[in-house]
Image (cartoon, rainbow, N blue to C red; front, top):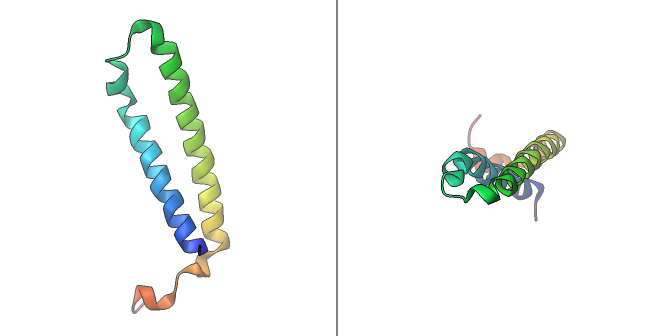
Length: 76
């Protein structure tokens, strides 16, 4: 798999995790009070994964900026 495809897929995963983080507030409205701690722990893990994946993908992108085929982008 090319580096560019890997980078795009990582950004898609970042988007997915971001949406889960945003929707957490609506999710916890329907959770039993006894399970709230577990849900907040899951949210903390999502946030940590989001930050980690964002950093690593950003670094990968800067290392592989030439991985985009110039013919895909058209005239610059």
